[in-house]
Each structure stands twice: as structure tokens, then as C-alpha cells.
Amino acid sequence: MHIQPLFAITDLEELHQHMRDYPLATTVVASAGGLEINLLPLDLCTNGPFGTLSGHVARSHSLWSEGCKKCEATVIFQSPNAYISPRWYVSGQTTGRNAPSWNYVAVQARGTLRFVEGSEWMAAHLNRLTAAQEDKRPQPWSMAEASPDFLTQTAHRLVGFEIEIRELVGKKFLSQQRTEADRSNLVSSLMLDMAPGSRAIASLIKP
Image 1 (tube, rainbow, N blue to C red):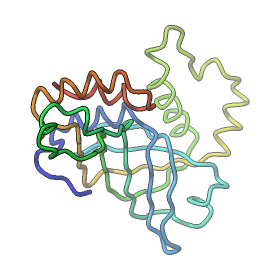
Image 2: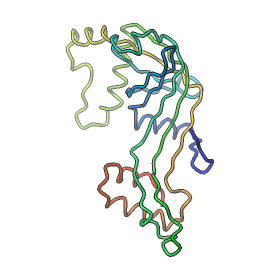
Image 3: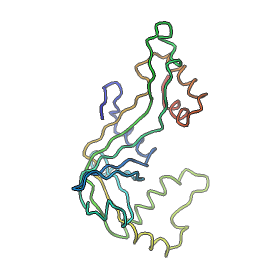
């Protein structure tokens, strides 16, 4: 990922928080057969210098069935994103020195993916993955509400994996290079915009 210093995320907790906020990640695995690319929900724990990711796939999934038992992985966590109209910037309107751009946040993790088998590991993983999404809800659902037989059958159809993160970088492109007046007007404009990611991006920009 190309990252200019102004847009780099260097704080480990900020990187981790972004990964927790947007856990459905693009997972790219390099194997003998080429690149395997999937969207997978991942759980983050703090084991290791940069943390460890855990996930799962069905045993029928090509990631498992084609023999990638230990291989290099790149994982990308992305925020919502939004197109930025030049009209929203206060500065540059008289000179015409404005161009369209895009605002977003992304974190990229790299490490070695290794598969993990075992019912206890899978049960703990599914509980953490579910709790991370449910705990803040008014009436959180838990794995304890599911039929034990159903959970056992489901776990047998799944295989888990872990990626101990070896490299971790992040980028937030949120108009930091612009003036305070520009960013303030940008937030106001995004809050009125109808594009799906506009309001989410507005909440991330610091005027």
C-alpha cells in the first residue's frame, strides 16, 4: 500500500480499532495455484507484536480443499468511502486549483496463514466473533441460545485459521492536506450527500 507520511496511521491501538470496527476483510492468500481472494469476517486478538487474526471457512471452501495449509496472506480492512467533489472545498474556488478525490481509511496486515483444527478452538472463536458484534446491542444474542446439536454439526463443517501479523500499516485519506475551513465545509457537504458512505466518512474527518 502506497502511504505518504501525512496519511499514515502509526498508532497500534488506532490500527487495531479500525480492524475491529470493520472486521469483514479482503483476505488474499498466495498459494501454488495462484491468488485466492475472499471476503471473510476476522477476529483480532493482541497475541504477538502486532496481533493475531482468526477466521474460519467451510471444509468445502477452496482455501482449505485446495491444500493451502500454510501460506502467505495479505488482509485489507476498509472503511466506508466517499467521493469528494471539488465544489465542497472553500479554498481554490477562485483559482480553479481543485480536483475530485476520494476519502477512505484502510489497514493492511500481512502474515502466514495456518489452519487450526479442534472443536474447542472453533467454539471459542465463534463465541468471540459473535460477541464482538452482539455485545453492544440492546438485546445481544449469544451462542448459548443456539441448539448444542446444531452448533456441534456446524463446527464439524468448519475449519479455523490464524494469521499472526508480521507487518501492519494503515492509511487514512481524510483531506488532512486541506485547510480547516475546507474540512469543515466538507463535513457539512458530506452530511447532506446521498451516497451510501458519505455520512460515515464525515464522522471520521477532523475539521
